[in-house]
Image 1 (cartoon, helix red, strand yellow):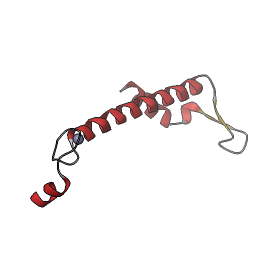
Image 2: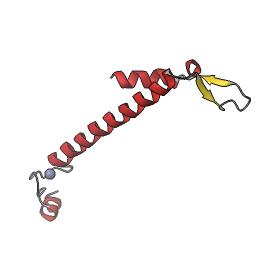
Image 3: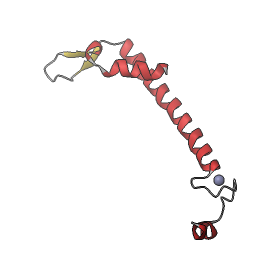
Length: 83
Ligand SMILES: [Zn+2]
């Protein structure tokens, strides 16, 4: 383990010897928080389309519309946007 540290040394930004270092984890955390916000925003836009339409035309390939209330993922989308 000592050889490992001597070889790689501390992070040049935060000085941590631990890998992944503190600044890497902070950057990664900020990136993931931002990504979750983008995903929630995209899901909210999708739900807006769903709330203002009947369903998906063409899903059943027989002319019937797949009604949004038959799409179980809608509830999951609503749940994750409220977390
Ligand atoms: Zn670092």
